[in-house]
Amino acid sequence: MNRVIRLGATVAVVAAAVSCHHLDDDRIPPAPVLIQFNSVADWDVYGVSGAMSWRRFIKSERLPSNFPYTAMSATGFGGVLLCGDVNGNPVAYDLSCPVECRSDVRIYIDEEALVAECPKCHSSYDVFSLWGHPLSGEAAERGYGLRRYTVIPGGMNEYRVISY
Image (cartoon, rainbow, N blue to C red):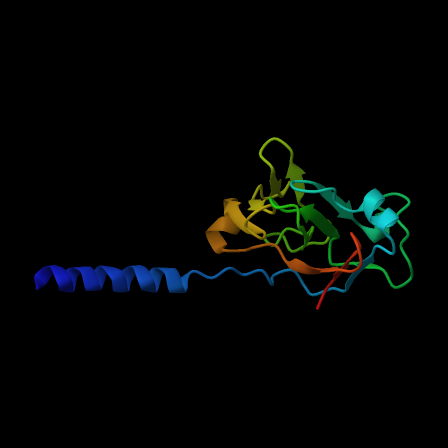
């Protein structure tokens, strides 16, 4: 009987610890996002080619160069990181680090470790398999994840990245 009570108490403690864990992916201020790929040709040139690929979109800096931005285009608070996850599906995040909360402090992809990292606080994030969850640094300590954006498929290989 004593064992059952101890096991029950242990399960209760573990359940409480797990339920208290919360990922805060809303630290970056909401900002409009609209990146349209109007044709398969646009996606082939400017989109992501498959698993573990990425591209940065920053309208104010005209990145990528020659992307057909329009007056309606918007790239979030600090820009948009468009990635192909481990299965090759497109996913998108704001480029701003949620620890720094500044539009000019942007994460980058560490090509060796294949994680996103902040150049200022050095927090790292898994953008290819864990939906922008923090892996290390202050972001992991505080539970700050990257703000995600919605990627909507259109026709064949056509996508739209939006916020809502």
